[in-house]
Image 1 (tube, rainbow, N blue to C red):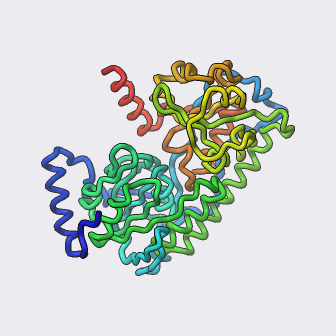
Image 2 (cartoon, helix red, strand yellow):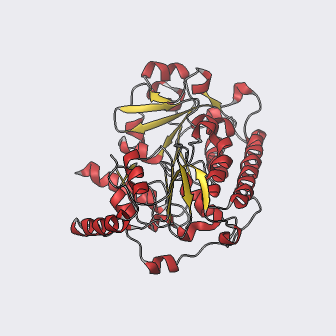
Image 3 (cartoon, helix red, strand yellow):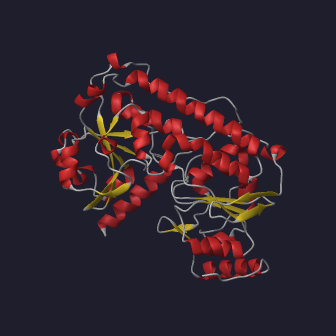
Length: 404
């Protein structure tokens, strides 16, 4: 539904939104102070690849991955995104007109207050890595690295945009994709005079699509050259990491672990992530056999116990919060079919933060390194002193909800 037809409505919308949220007691949603912006501190920029740390071992040094038992959590060693430049505006040309992927041309004239919103947090990570971290004024639920978890949340129920909270932040540009919505909310922002640039979803290309997404974001911010440099750096990190992982993974296809990525939510429903979901790319990048690709399972859809038992995965990859939503690992292993698989019998489940594992952004190499270490050398898997703050907070909430 198109609610406003001219940019003059923007000031009224902002005022109404602020009033409504204050009345509802939502002052912590969609608000950011000027002092918070002034206190923003970015790390030193670098154009050189930041390759993640991997165990200095080869497949010959490790036990066969199919013989490993027990669960492992894959933690990235650092969630700090390194910007490609600390002065991105020196490379910037504004205004810039780009074609949004929904077919509408958008002109961006001001990048002082940026919102980058999608389901997996990859867009905000790209904005940060381009050097515009201090211009981000809000976040989606998946954005939590490099201190961005302190930004006000502008979504509800995971992927539903709160247009009022967004308007209260007075963004000068919104970068988004179709993984989040509803589309009417994004249109409402445009009607309020805010350029809303949709970028194509790249998860179907997996790790190979990261560079193109970065470039799309850079073009929308008027820094195409920085985009090329960042995409090149990120692709070199990914390719270098995949090459290093190759030394840990068995070379004989018969010895490679058979892996499935299950999306678990609740005690009775779980989905396969198949070909074209992005999960297939992660599994193949760590040198494992993707059982979904083997049986020709495409996309993401509910699975059944018979299909899972027949696929016989040695390892199940799942999201940390998904396992928690099922009641924990023991409860997840009781879901139909899982117990009858080699992975279920051996409790061989590798979990990773929902906010990282499928983000497909500048930290992709770190994700691959963490997953590979958890699969092939869990004894050397990195374990932080404390879990990431965003995951810990949500785990505590899930536990409280289960106690009610």
